[in-house]
Image (cartoon, rainbow, N blue to C red; front, side, top):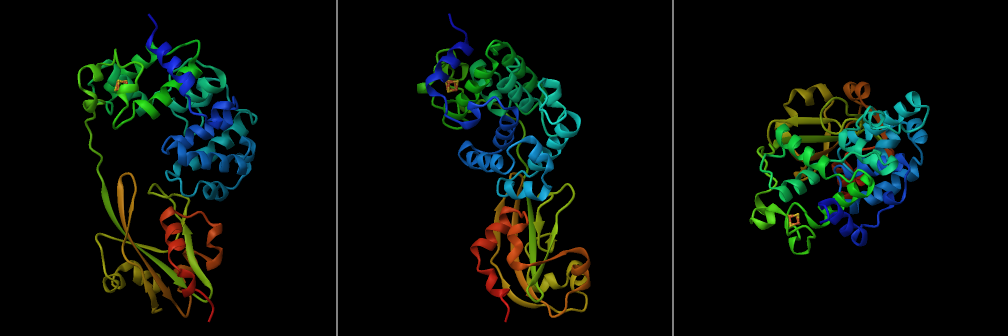
Length: 358
Ligand code: SF4
């Protein structure tokens, strides 16, 4: 009788997705693809994969690039910590490994942002290191096949399912095994409406045989969503506007934005003018309001942002903006990596007309 891994590998051969990172053993390219695919669907990720490798064809070129260039290529992909970590890890490879990607699990795992899953995947695909690459997709698959009801968002559930993945791993072919599992989870045993009728292991799958597919994988935590209210002030002074790079642990670290006032709820221009931030920003300068956008909703994984853009004009540059912000030409905004929200707004609204010289 063939094992589950034999069956999945046999299913994979004729059904494999034709993906560029499957055709290489270069650990750098594999790493780029794995990081992109952590939070991004294959269809969208493909484009970024090509773009990223075109901009930074080697780990040395990534290490030598300024962070702003990396963020600009990553712009629109979201989860920007990934790009910052890749940049830091490339510099680690350059300084600590002589520019050569480490070829052991421990060496890979020591790189910034590389967790167990990514180290195992790069290790298996580039160096045939026998470790299962285990993420949410893999927990889902094994919990359904073996009927594991321990929630996958608990350490106990993850430990139990990792143990199963380890037992099922084809140690002679970890590269093919891990690819087969990824494709199986991405195309057949999907989170919603898995294609059980076409599944090669349905006859032994606990969830299928016991009508428990909708119940597995079990989870115990609900995602808590926070609502936030942003007022972005696009302040025009002559042909210039003011932007700054976001820092700290909040969203969009290292991306550029306009002066921002965050409020506790949706607010009016009148109320905005009474905030401490507005007073600090403009002092005695009274800006003329040229345009107010409708309220836009921007959805992130754990946050819903309600955003309004205000286009303002000042006759004198306010001291606070001049000292805390970068003064840039409005038509050079494209040179700075910005959150997709700002980029999208600038592309959709004809804001340029408010910035044209008289
Ligand atoms: S039978 Fe359905 S639930 Fe079970 S492994 Fe196959 S696709 Fe997944």
